[in-house]
Amino acid sequence: MDLRQLRYFLAVAKEKHFGRAAQALNIVQPALSMQIRALEEELGGPLFERTSRRVELTEAGKVLETQARRTLAQAEFTRESTQRALRGETGIVRIGFAGNAIFSGTLMRDLRHFHHVSPEVEISVEEMTPRRQVEAIQAGLLDIGYSPDHSALRQPDLHAEKIGEWGMLVAMADDHPLASVPEITLAMLAHEALILYEAHDADERLSLLLAKALGEQLNIAHRTGSSLNVLAIAASGLGVALVPVPLRQVSVPGLIYRALNAPELTANLLVISRKKESSPAVKAWLAQVNGRGD
Image (cartoon, rainbow, N blue to C red; front, side, top):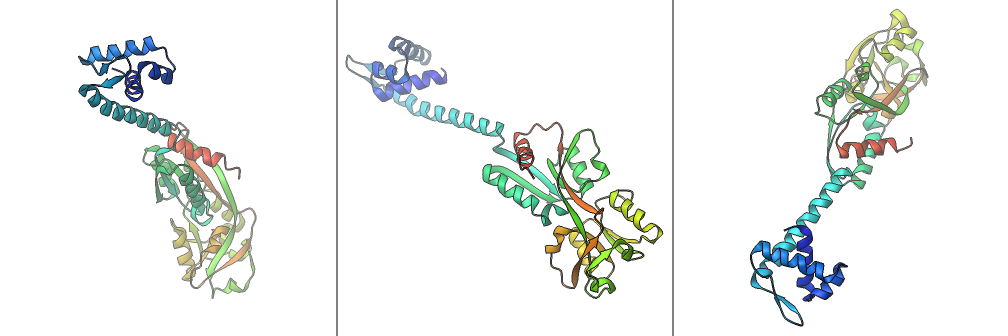
């Protein structure tokens, strides 16, 4: 017994006539009759009571009619579910984020769009430091990372695509001596206690640029893995923070932002993933990022 035979059986049950059923199925009547006889032989008895004008279901046929409808409906559901999974419309996508992913609005935009086109995909989102994202993706505990660039991304099994870049601001307490200066230069930050978002190790790009500009006058006083911690420390007057421009929208009592005249200092955002990704849902997320065109 196969699905085709069940479809043929239901057509005859509906039409109550072999000729009309064959016409509805777009096959010749002898082929239909042969399949029904084969089904009856396999099951061990008649499914129809045949007369010269019409056919009626036997009691066994009525049982099969109910079960055949359920079986075909389940088969169709299975087919559609599998095809949707292959298209990435179901499944799970686990996302880690840090830094500008939230404050730039990038992650929320991607989440909103993906949920609109694939509402049945389960999405898990967790704040995670950039280096933890790398470790979790490599360990299979995370699928996508939103992270600033850093040296740990230079892995042969990872793919990283830059999706945003912004200038930097200086965040400080509103009673800081530099609060009255509308635009800060790097020279003004000499010996100032600096607060940095610890996306990088000390030898990475931001620290290297600051060291080149300030030399022995560079004073990195605090490093933290949370953007909000950076702003909180700055608002408390323990130092001045270098933060990406999108953080300007975050209002913290006692904190002000000032422009930084240092175009060489920028913050970026990358989407990180495995090069050999097998999940259709994750591939669909990456296709959305790649097709965004910004």
